[in-house]
Image (tube, rainbow, N blue to C red; front, side, top):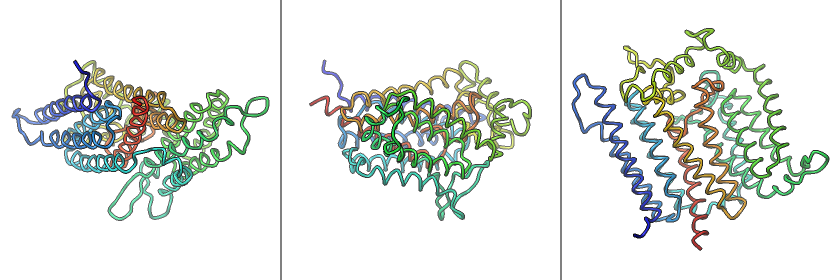
Length: 432
């Protein structure tokens, strides 16, 4: 029997994702009815979702026939879980999220057709590095930025509201991949007794990183600072395999965290809440305490989709910003430890596929780009899951592909598209 082609394997996985999506939406709808009665109206979300990802599959079949067959179905399942939970929490927001998923898939398809070779990005790496700083600085511009929960992350331009830091993440990874590829030998060799690099080779990295950190201090975005610093440190270590960079980076992070702790009251409050959320469980510690209760209340297999204790009698959520910052808590409440662990496993499989692409790449830029994009998604997922479970302080960033938010969805589809393009290049090289 002939083995399935990559694209046929992808199609079968998408069919399984479609069936799971139908089951999820139907379960949420039936649980919301006083008298359970099946309706095809709730399945329109699932049908729309499957048609959308089938379109993405067809684009891949035409543009990138050798791309990895598992990345798109994993991203589709994560997106389906997010849409199902948002529909359960607030159906109107699920409709808006669906619109942003359409935008993300359209942008993904455009990227597949118009950027056949990701190595073209290497020629504009400095432009993208500067663009990352500009995007991070936009919320600090008077009249554009909006402050929520002490952090200035959002930009309002006319009717459009978006979070530019999500796109800066991708730009920064491309810049680091190109620059580290060009200078990895000098950075790996180093000079002096401790093997530190010369300012000539390490200076531009520090300028880009320092600019990003200064902007994040200005906007008081602790989560973004942690994310970008972690991506920077991970990619430098991947490129050089030198532990002194890790030590120096951790010291710099500790000093920076202490400085931000001193100047940003809301960061100090988050640290205090993390250390002892039960000191003020009805005010400052309310979100984290309710999140821990929701996760614990799910038990092993959860309360069932649509049956968790998430919505008050007044129609509000027990945990503020449930569909954005705390959607993992909602999933753990309704699907239990098994469902929450399955969600983490999806991220682990995505990360495995991404690093596998990086290991099989035959050029430095492709290796670093695939590893950087994968690290960015993995670190972001860890930060938000660690925050809502009390492992690290709350940060307020989104769970990739799952949380409500247009900027996050679109940026993560761009990240997915770049990984698929790299994988197509890698697999075609292996076939040759």
